[in-house]
Length: 106
Image (cartoon, rainbow, N blue to C red; front, side, top):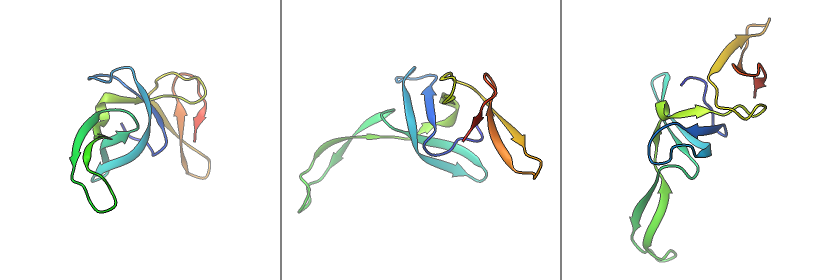
């Protein structure tokens, strides 16, 4: 899905976390396309961590990347999952618009 940015609210469409909402923490691109994203509280995996001088070891839960096809943006104004629509201003700048309510998304 093009147009996703850091700090966008998204909902998971399929998989073990289906229906959960979260905020995008990191975006991974391959060329010009967004391939995967890390979403807060979604796709948690257990990571075994060795102890260091300052940090005790143990099993740590952490977010793993999720494919961009499994998530959808949630509009901040209507609070519904939506696809993005890109519009142009008179000056030629692009901005994102919700397809359901028509509000601009920052």
